[in-house]
Picture 1 (cartoon, rainbow, N blue to C red):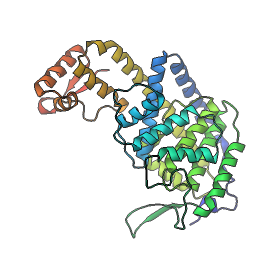
Picture 2 (picture 1 turned 90 degrees about the vertical axis):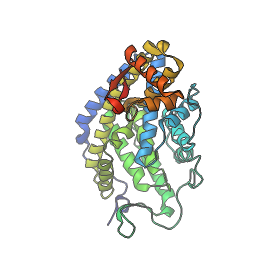
Picture 3 (picture 1 turned 45 degrees about the horizontal axis):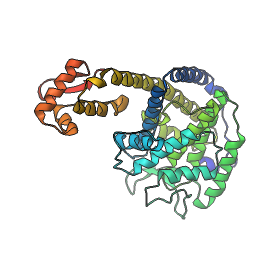
Picture 4 (picture 1 turned 60 degrees about the horizontal axis):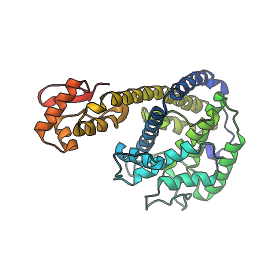
Length: 366
């Protein structure tokens, strides 16, 4: 089996640019609408909205790679990095700090020219608290870098990357290609194309022992931001994670050919979908902030702690809803007090009750 990097014309990708014309128009309208909404928000609402996007991206880009971090740890890490006071200042999983740091780094420095040093810096940030990974260093060794699935002895090889000894030259070529392909501001059609190819190109080199997916998606986010002239207001990884198998299948197919029209079409759709989903997250954040403004003064200390916990779980909500048992554990109170507090929250319109008997649970009434 041959791969794209083995082709004699590598990395001269071939594609039909017209495939993204309609998607580019949709993306232009969506991104302009989202920017208008965010720009019209008070400063504190803007901060909360951007924070939600960074939290979601950090969590989802990690989940795609099988790394699962608590929302609380990621949120605390981002807030600490931004200098924002957090009620949840204890970060239990130090690895969550790395991906959180990357989100802030990419967002704050999106206009910094892409270089090998920048990419290595990002990798070092992600694996700062890992002793098993060569942080900020390209992979070495003679064993092939393969993407496989299946049981031992019956593996399915999806892709094999260039040999480790070729990685330094491949990365020099990648950075040169990226910087030579300059996109004028607001040229969204060609930016979608460049972003799609950038991600595919980087993933095909697979320069690190681990973390290539997370760094590759950060590069895609940076590429989009450069064209928009501002950090993106979306979570690309959330859109990918919605159908992860389609993402891997599209990537697998694209890495076998230099003709990448189908890949560009697929990845551009993901970008457009991420922007559409971004509007939903903004609406949730607005509801969340207005909800707190309306009810916070009416809550006792226990109730406030629980409500903030529910809100901090974001648009996906608190799994299984809130119960008297969970309330008791979070608020560190008796079952009788938990039940009384929950009933009061329902009467005040803060929560709504669902189910009956032992199956009774509560959700925020946004």
